[in-house]
Length: 326
Image (cartoon, rainbow, N blue to C red):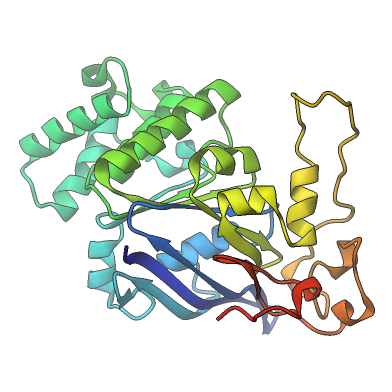
């Protein structure tokens, strides 16, 4: 199975106060055809910056280096017109807050149809018909009425379904979903995640799902990459990560999850401290100031990614006797 997306040594720096501050460092991962990769971590660890860098949606103050290979083409090097053909047509994105993503002065039907008319070059009538059908697929009741509604007239769950409809209407090969359920209640979250899973299967779409919720990852993803302070610190199959987490940060995230089926009542174990800001990154391992297993060398040298299992890697000196991941 070939890779739809392959990210190689992605670095993102922001120009600030006369110099550059590093937000993302040496991030590499791949997504296969039809696969869902979860990118998880605390707020401020660089997940959204990474997703925006993939499709070149960062501000002009950002400096992005590395390679973002979509079906063999480096999206960081393609021309503006070619990028616009890919972005929204072949590669779509769902943002965190649908109310700020939808245009408040355009009706829903016009916003869905715009993607079709721009990328598929269909007539207004055909675009309207396909948009109506897409609203039905995302489970919106009274789609004919919703086509003529404005975003403020819809609930949060309905607006998120509309965002999914816009993202999927051109049958993209890759969908980037940045915290698609953050502002929704638990019941609606489950419906939206199930909808995304169903549509990705129907359309054969690969998904990069960005979230801080490990429960969401366990339910929807094939593989997971754990991010901390701009680095990927662990990556592997979902089953391996949850059954045998090898990085202290991943272990801490899993220990902080409430277990409602546990017979013995245990206190949650929080990870002490906070994610460092890009302007004040610690030397050596970036997790060292918060790590319960820290050694003196951790504060001096940045660890490599070490192979700890089949397609399972971890950025920790606890595994420095094992093979370095390529």
